[in-house]
Length: 224
Image (spheres, rainbow, N blue to C red):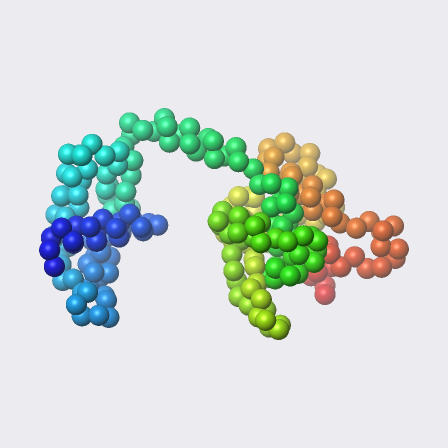
């Protein structure tokens, strides 16, 4: 295999990885194919040499990024010169709030999970295809399995990103209806306030139930 192709493969691996790749990781990946003709025998020193060649290429072509060593491995990073623009991008992203429809859909999933799309639509009364895709893209929800019902519909649940975003350690920390009013008094988190507002608004009152049990509250779900 030509050196140029090895360079591009190693470049692709480091670029696509969610975490730093060590030299050992790269060597193992390159030789792990089940197809013999795709296996690449290479040493850690050769990988390191290729990474240096790639960085020289980025310097020569005046690219805005380099491959850096971090946490025992290698990953792509932009140059400090561009920090101000990256900061502006991050600030702009932080302004993007979940829409009311997305918040309502997320609230249903958070309190009813695991839950299917038909169940979500039955509660919300609208099609939620777009909202599910949007929440999946933001890693706030994930597919956790399939329901044991006709058609085997997908089951949705929240993610670790959801917990991190809303500042909770576990789903049992989700606020009970009686706690929502207190949470709304805290002005720290606008998105969180809106989510809890939507959940509170959708909770039936005692008068609305006319003595019937409230089956939509988190407390009653735990006892069902």
